Image (cartoon, rainbow, N blue to C red; front, side, top):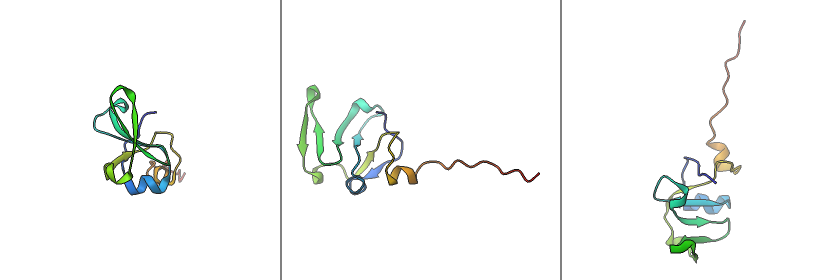
Amino acid sequence: MIANRQTYSRFQVLDAEYEAWWREGDTLEEYRYYYDGISFWRMEGGGKRRRIESWRTPRYGWRHGEECGCELCIEHEPADIRPVSVA
């Protein structure tokens, strides 16, 4: 599960109802908050998670996984543009 580069707001994450991560660093292991599609969780020492209210999580900077097929991620995928031959 490697997060893509597009970031979303907490509201977008709630609306999409797909797994999302919020992290401070560049590696997925550094994520602090997790959304499982239903509830938000804060990661604590020793790999423990604690369920928290959505309003206690960061407003912006949420990411979905690379393979996510939600509407948000599909909208931000680069278009596959190929030149059309006119010959």
